[in-house]
Image 1 (cartoon, rainbow, N blue to C red):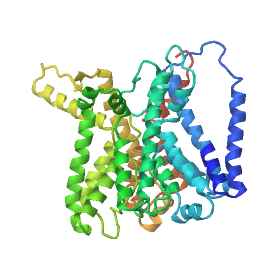
Image 2 (image 1 turned 90 degrees about the vertical axis):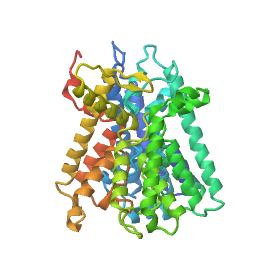
Image 3 (image 1 turned 120 degrees about the vertical axis):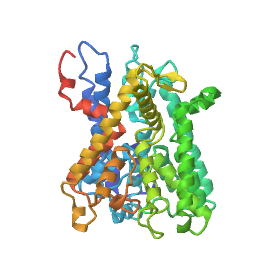
Image 4 (image 1 turned 60 degrees about the vertical axis):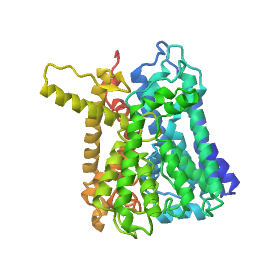
Length: 487
């Protein structure tokens, strides 16, 4: 909370804003000091179970303490809204439960530090707060810290890019910081052509892009920025959607592995085809080809990266709702997400590849029962455990999404406004579990989650955290088996 505290001092905000950071900071220091005295007497080894528990509890407690500045400062007076907002920040979802007036009140009435806090939480959660901790603390000799990395990092396969866990974490964060700084510099250059892109805006938008989050300074998201700023943000959204191991390979000049990476090729093909098809469909809605292409390119980059920024209202904007086929492409992108090992959410492109290949082998085995089909990725055979866990994850992902959609539809204030359609409920659930932000219907680019009930906000908050941690850690935390002794 040092970053928003400094922001409050720079903008000379009211004393209550400053106190709203000092209270949780002081409280956490005291709690941390007290917990330092309670150490295991015997076994201190960390296994997979401990890794999952540490990660799950850390993210839940981070959200609980992280919402305190909103409540103490008085800008948000409802706990469930504040909890939803900061959980949306840490999980890089970018779904907002604030009304447009509340957001503008922060911007124009001394709440810059709170805007900074909610967007900086994207940057913290993007790479993972525990990955950052692993980069600075001493690494245990038994390599148990890898269990934390596996529990927190997105994707079907997680490992070290170099032999030492600590060095791997440092490399990841150095790449992350360098790319964030590059975007900040690029957006400040855009200020020459874009008066709306201030230095504060460049920080907010870069933190949101780096973490593939989606919080902006105004309810209009990126619509008020000039085309040059929109192109820069769109390009960086795609760059942060790529597995960070790819950048390490480029740095060490291992171009062979980059070129042979199937997930990267598949991701780029999906983006190119999606942009091309949507552009041709929405040409009649905009003044010229460039404008249609820019909105299509930005929207595809935003949803496939699960960032959630928008330059146009593709659901019910001034130009009208985009064609159904284009909206179906967007739904597909929301479900797929970007690459494993990136800061993006969703199922991940590598899982889509594995599921596709798995389905293909099953069809072949039905035709030729005696044939033995091996699933390969990047030319290497995949372990059966990886394939099985991918199929199980997909089933659990769809089940959780549908169950949560049912739960939030039990009662919702949106029903009183005739906005509670199946499209709204399903895409609201999908946007939260995939950590996207916007959906369709009442939760489209021009909508939000402010009208949802406290129960719906709690369900969707659980879904956001579960989706960010790839489901298993949170389910393991609440499993009775996890807490049995002797396991």
